[in-house]
Length: 324
Image (cartoon, rainbow, N blue to C red; front, side):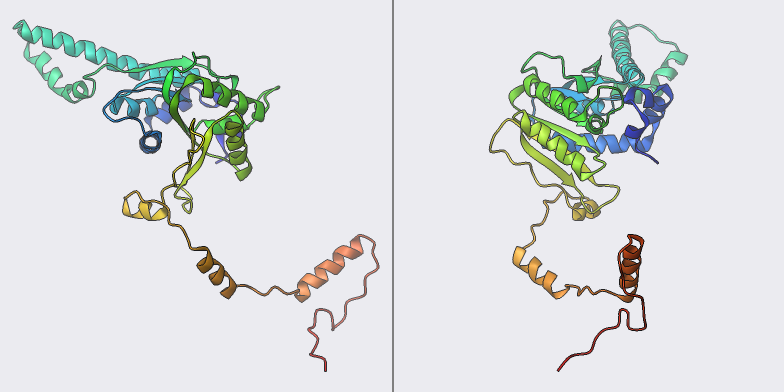
């Protein structure tokens, strides 16, 4: 399957059909939850204190749901209206559930009798009522992050972005220059975050050059930090997180290793001793030589270029004996 970024604008790719499919996929829900929890962990937010978090590229609100579960207030922006419609439906359902719960409690306090059919419906909806006990703490905004973030300075306590940043590395319309869009985004992000806040942006780079371009644009506007790579040796579980901070001396934490993926525990990456690594490299060093096939192909290439090349013979590519 080709990358969605190569098909055009995100607003066109994530239409109503794709948005519903995205939000109803159990696999996608699980992956988004895992990535968001890791991003919140890297934010290092204060414990037992709700924070105001910006969710860039919030999509259908799966990452916002995780923020709500951890007691935070969030504002999400996305370029796809269809994705925002799905997210808004979830928020409205939760708010309606809270209103219905309040009415039921008032009816119970007033000793209002309920018929058996109503009681049966309530029992079926008990699990949903428990999940919707509190109203949604999220809000939504339709906006393209490549044009900058239109918020007041020092508004947010942190920022997360799940699987969205790589879209800025592609030019899907006339006049879109990836480097300018990235610089505009990071410059506005630097302004809207409170001093001392951090940003964790998870993304899927197509090439190493894209990861370098993103890091350079973030550093150019004043951010410190770097890219954290979890499970670097795994094809499916490998994840890139750009961790940004205002602290000049800040260094991004090390990523999770493949050992943590197998055991289910989070571990710091292991540092390999340089001397041992070099010694091992010398023991397994290969001796490269020019084979007969390589020589024949090389001579054929030279002939096609019109150069004077000696004809092939039975001695071509044969190793010479030791001389006295």
